[in-house]
Image (cartoon, rainbow, N blue to C red):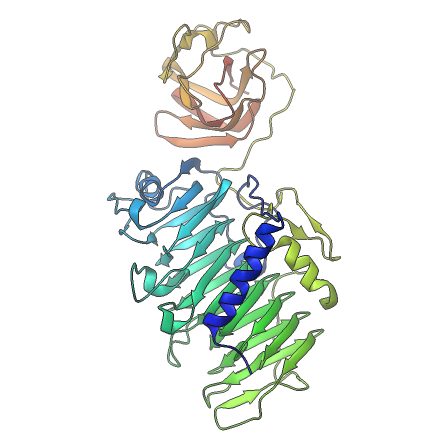
Length: 514
């Protein structure tokens, strides 16, 4: 007989305390957004790129996250928000602006698009504060912990959902997240990962969902059947009573997940839902697949799964377990490519890769964790440029032109970037700032070379090249060097440093027609 959730949590807390006493600690390495590339259904419908190509902004509070959203030129301007520290009710206020629609007490991603929210540094924890995605598209959430979000009691946030999506949401990728509660509905919690009211093309990957009465759902009721196309892979569901997930209509794909201690039911396919269940490992659980708590049945396709100490209840009028010998009842056609790990190694590879603070490691398809290189096929807006040593031909148009900028430091001059002298340089007053080259009349430019001064090579970590006449982004990059772009006629071009490891030193900002 299963113990009440509160007792099971008590036992888990004791185990955690013992681990801490033994000197076991979790590390939280620096992370970068969207390492390895999006997978699953989030690759469909045009794909999911989040804020790729946009400005990087660091935030340590919920209010700063909202301010970053509201500070964009428009609600669709790409942005990557790097979050570090603990975000809670005390530091999450409403911010107003034409490019956002925020609220206090919740991270509100509402009526926006092209956003990446990624935990960096020592980690990002959303404590008793949910993330709400509504009427939005092209969203990436990565390397974050969301814990103890309540719908009743105090404080409350996001209807009790750790991450909740509703109302015409498209293309969301949640990756390497840890979503956890401290009980079930009677303790004030709801779902960890909920999708409803026309939410489609979602992937949840390499994440941990634990200690909750409800793992998550697709569809809020038997009449909310407009959701679907959701992929769950390489996740760990641990100490969950039910809804791992609950599917009402729609299509889902669950592969290479580790389910341990599903206490009442697991994957609950109902109301016409279809789910493909590949190479998962189910352990110490009950009724891990079937239709439960309704007579409106769903269906499933199964292959390669391991059922380790799984018990099955008897069929009834509102209880249709797939076991004890699960067989396929439908066929689900998957439109994207994917590689299956052998089910037998899933507990180990998921343990080593899933959740926040694991270095964004993924499986190589042979049960071996690895830190992948960024996926070169992932599109960005605009395309990233690759710096190189190639010297451009032609005349450096910056020589003799004007220069200005912002964040000038003492003892430097903007003019040092256009004097042809590598021993002189311009620096901002901190780690970010901008410098421009300007002409008295429109000038055609298609290539720039940014040279850092001796002793400062590699200090610049992220930058944007802007058409200062229109504000359009011409190119972006992560290290100084050569950037090319379609030939553009302009009077002023700006090199904007958005991230650096120290104080940058720009020796030359060269511009060329070709």
